[in-house]
Length: 351
Image (cartoon, rainbow, N blue to C red; front, side, top):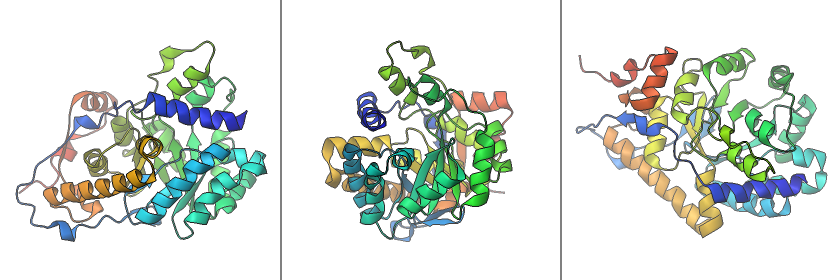
């Protein structure tokens, strides 16, 4: 059942595609006509907490747990290795419960022995399971994904979420690698971010709406759907700004429907230090193949370099000082929630 569900999720994700309603169109970069730099001086390395990355692009968690998804993870691992990208595997609970599918995750480390790889489990995991997931793929970090609404809509999903915080805190205290808490596409708001930080979580992935819609995916699997929940959650733009009221720059991954270099730069300029992509990569890989995905990553890196050159920002962290005007629904949301956004627009102000 779990094995078939894994492939069902992949097929539905491809069919439904990306929503494109991540809210990053409300972020407006301020043009710099005197950048005083060159493309040769641009550096794309970044850090998330104690993790040092060669690129701000993260191949975010997608799949694993079946023979079909092993093929996907194999090709993703090749791309991660060749382009020096960090990569997260999908939830490893399948392999913890059924050791016969471990190879669908272990293939990632086998093909990318020196890469940055994130293990992945849900908030139901115990300390022992977390340690097992990390050891399974010699992970550099552990993602704990939060997917409450997906579970509630999922026909066979969880219905109780008692003890989530206690389990997360226990894992943070016990494992030897950084723990990243990630939403799967409904957003981490400041109230939850504050609770996670109090638990000792140092890195979060805001995972807002705008990308793969797991509410819609699970509705597609139900006999009686609840489509009125398909727009549940908060957009990537608002989730990012909410999280930044709690977490400092250098500790946040932005994800949720991000598809091109301009959207990446906007998310980083707001305060993210890395950007997770899943749906866009999966689409290219499954429809055009591994070579096309390698080319796509090159295009993303070239685009990042182009925009950073235009802005006069030679390093990722310098984007945090470039002016960013926040407009539209995102600005309305922030005003209603008491989130100050004017300071983004006046950064780099000439005295």
